[in-house]
Image: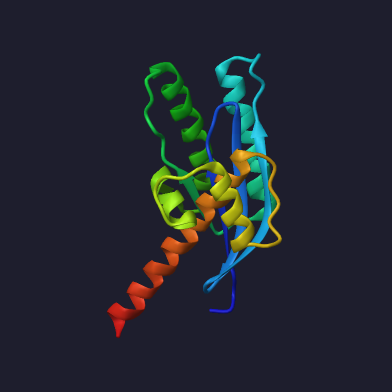
Length: 170
């Protein structure tokens, strides 16, 4: 396979949804772009969800990824905040799905383990490893960095699946 696979990683949030796009070919990772889609906290929930949808749809249209990966929701003590995060997560999963892009989900600990080698770590460790894995990487803020980490986790997971398929067919 000489065609790179373009992956969008998405870190869902109602205020800020991070996105990061990488190309992967074999074991190599190449940074493409990253950013954050924000919603206006002064608007009603439905309008904010529309802002996330429209912003992320523009990113998907501009970069045409082949695959998408989204971080799974963690449940915290604030049920209302968890519910709102779930609604934002539903929107960000809908955008690539409506574009015909398969969407995978990863637990936060799986993402950290794929990028820094352990399931628990600091944001700075993720930032440092992103720069090591993709020297030309650019990101502003934790949300975009987390989204890139999610894309890398998916790339590693897909590589393992391809290897298992090759071994199974041998």
